[in-house]
Length: 65
Image (cartoon, rainbow, N blue to C red; front, side):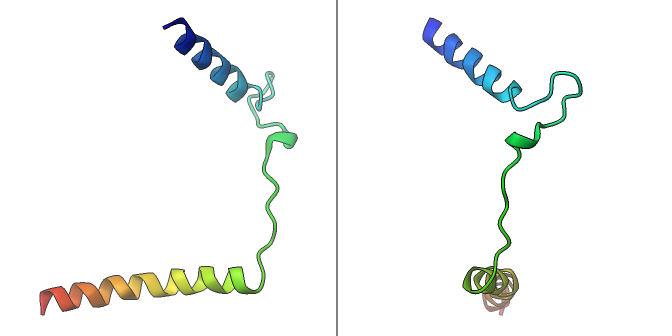
């Protein structure tokens, strides 16, 4: 039981360490670096975003009729 409490305490300390103690805003170093997608990954995301709703619609129509 003591080990579980220790782990929970450490997790809380790590979670709070990304915040500025004065303002509770995330510190810039803790914010993730986001790279702009291009090429094939971007095309794949668009294909899934556009294609997935159509698959759901078509399967629903097939199920009903």
